[in-house]
Image 1 (tube, rainbow, N blue to C red):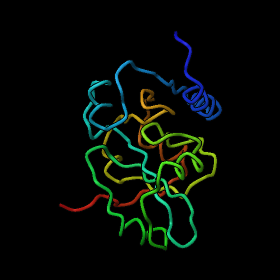
Image 2 (image 1 turned 180 degrees about the horizontal axis):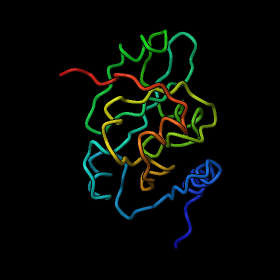
Image 3 (image 1 turned 135 degrees about the vertical axis):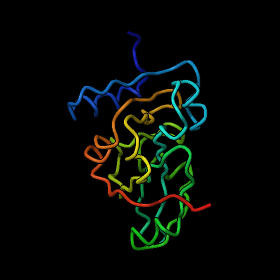
Image 4 (image 1 turned 45 degrees about the vertical axis):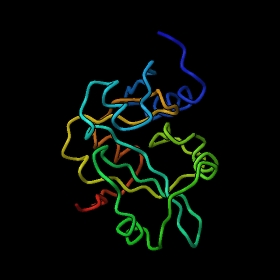
Length: 161
């Protein structure tokens, strides 16, 4: 087994502490976008659990939305769920609050624990794949495990249309 890069190793350490036997896999091909990840893994785009970081406008808190790779996030719905308007976070905010760069943000192990919302559409799937610290690293899990390990609220976050 090849050695994981430092960011992927940090995610593996968090997963080891959770203790469910998840293994981070780093791939040659990029898994930065949902489409790239699905192609590299050999799964559907819907099975990619993409971690999107938003920022609350008033309080500046990080909000993690874990959405199905085929869905666009309804920012108004997310704002209503967290109780204040949100905006997309820039790369510096993402790195500061999560400890990871955009494209590799995992659903766990953030520098500052975010408010977490999980796309209800993910719960219809048996297996999903999440980013693991780098644009080339992923790990496999179930939707129930995602909810358990993040403490996230399952909600309708998909933009209609």
